[in-house]
Image (tube, rainbow, N blue to C red):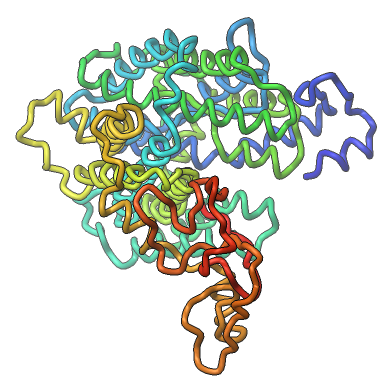
Length: 548
C-alpha cells in the first residue's frame, strides 16, 4: 500500500501540525492497521507458545495465553498511540509481548515457579520499571550499543534450541521425535520463508513467515501430521480471564532476573521511540520518551492479571512505517483495536496452538535468527577503537551461551542463583553491564595500551574492503597503496605529494599514536606533515571506507 497515492486519490487526508496526527479515511486506516497486525503477528504469538510449552500447558491453555497476549498487545498499542496524560508517546508504535523476556521466563518456569512465578516476576519488575521511568534518562548511558547489542544478539541465539526442538517435533517422548518427516516438514517451511522473501513483492516478503506457517500447516494437514480436533474445545469468543492461571507468586531471584529484562526493554523502547520520531519527522523530547516508557511499563503491570507478559515496541513495525510512508498514529491505533478483537477470540488462540511444531520450528529458525541479526546490527554501531569493547562483546556473549550449551552448568548452585543465570539473556546482560562499567566508566587501572585481543582485532582481523577487492579483480593492483606491486604492475608515482586518507599498510602504529598519524575519528594529528610521510604518497588517493 502507498499512503501518498491513497491521499491523492480521495483527498480525505488532513494536514495537521504534527505528521503523526494525520487522519486517513476509515477504510484506509483499518487497512493499514491490519497490515501492521500481519507484520507482527508471528512475533507476538511466539513468546506465549514457547513459555506455555515449557510450562507443560495443554493446547487449550496455550491458546488462552496467545489470546491474552493479543488482547493486552492491542490495549498497550492503543495506550501508546492515542495516549492519556503522562502515558503514551502518541507515536505510531505497535506494542506486544517482548522477546527479551522469553529465556528468563523459561528459566523461571524450569526453576519451579511455573506460570504464577513468571506472572509475579513480571508484575513486580514492571512496577519497579514504572517507578524509574522519570530517571531512566540518567541511567540509559549505562546501556550503550555494546550492552544492548550483546543482549539482543543473545536473545536470538538462546531461542535457537527452541526452534530446533520444535523442528524435531516438540516433545522428546513422541515416537516420531526427530524423525526425517518432522525435520523435513520444518525444512520445507523454512524453504517457503526463504522463497517468499526472494521472489515475492515487498508486502509478501514482509509477511513471508506468516504465509509460510499457513502453507506449512496446510501441507502437514494433507500429510496427516496436523490435528485440529481440539480447536472446538472451549468458547469461540470470551473476555480474558482475570487471574486465569492463579494468583501470581513472588520469588526474589525471579524478580531480579526479570528486572534485568525490564531495563533492557526500556532501552529498546527508548531507541524505537527515537527512531520512529526521526522517520515521522516529529519532535521527540525527554517528556515524550518518559510518557512512552510509562505506557510500556503500565501495560506490563496490568498484563499478568490477564495472563500475559511484558509489553514493548515492535521494531519491525517501525520499519514498516518507513517503508509505507504511513505516519499516522491513528492507523497503528486501529491495528491495536484489531488485536483487541482477536484477543477476544480464544478459538483463534487454539488454532495457533494446534499448528504442528515442525512448522513452527522451520519458521522459528528465521524468526529467531532475525532477532540475533538485529543484535548484530546494533553491535555494528559499537566503537571498536575503544580497545576493551571487543572484550566486553566477546566475554558477555560467551557467558550468555554457557547455560545454552550446557543447561546443567549451574545445577549445583543455590536455587536463586540458578534462576538468574540459567537464562542466557540474564547472564549476558549482567556480564555486559558490569564489564561496560568496569572498562568504559571506571577509568582507574585501565592500561593505556589495549589488550592483545583488542589490538589483534584492530590490526589483524578486519575484513578486506570492497574497493581493494575490486582493484585486485580489475588489474591486480591495490590503487593508492604502497604495498609491494604485483608482477606486471606499474609502480606508483612517488613524486606525488598530495596527502591521502590511506592508512598505513602494515596496520602498526607507535605508542600513543593511531595508524597513519591520525586520531580515532580520522583527522590528522596537530603538527604532523603528512606529505613528508612516504606512507601517504600514492598515485591515486582512495576514499576512506567507512567501517562500524
